[in-house]
Image (tube, rainbow, N blue to C red; front, side):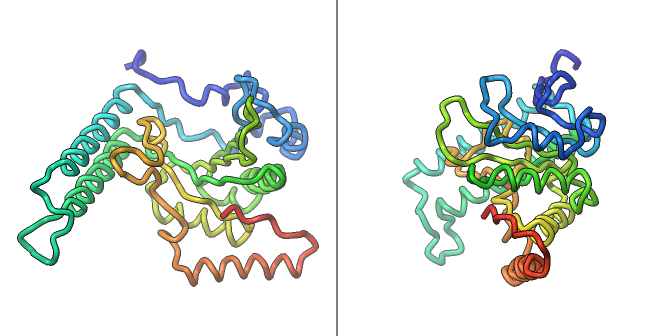
Length: 268
């Protein structure tokens, strides 16, 4: 099984200088001031800047696990395409309980594939995932520092969130946005994911775009995949009502009006 192990996130090794842990020679403030995502260019060897609060849960990714996930996704894709091409299946049932339309059948296939992927992750202990943020370059240093410091010594440190990373400036310097990933050991834990989301909005004033299990990344499940499966597991609106989200935003705004610091940009 040892030879089956995959090398992932090698930039978090001790030799990678763009990764901070509590044992780092620099304080978190010094590290964030020295390595700013807007000023760090990826020359092919530093695509991410990492901050780790505690040793991340050791979730070993093996080719056999990823291979099993790829097979699940491939089977679902083939079924979706097969249903799409079958001229004997109508698009809609049109209210006929004895007829199932293409969309209903395809939705059933996608739902089952997601359930199978979740079961695979739970059985193999690879349930990790991340909340995702896309932030404009003019705000990225401030937003990244806010999340990273909170993860190490603030409100996020009181949640299950264990590490975070931010993309650096690409070699071709295309696109003005950076990606921040905030990791949770079990992204399928709805209660824990909701707790982290509430802290992000109420305390930090940042709203993630969505959450994604790592298994989706490893098997190549991205936007516009031919299976039609959504490449994320949670959005803020999936976990909190519109009224609850509004209340959290208002609470943060109220605190900022009373405090000396200006509000951190929302990442919606």
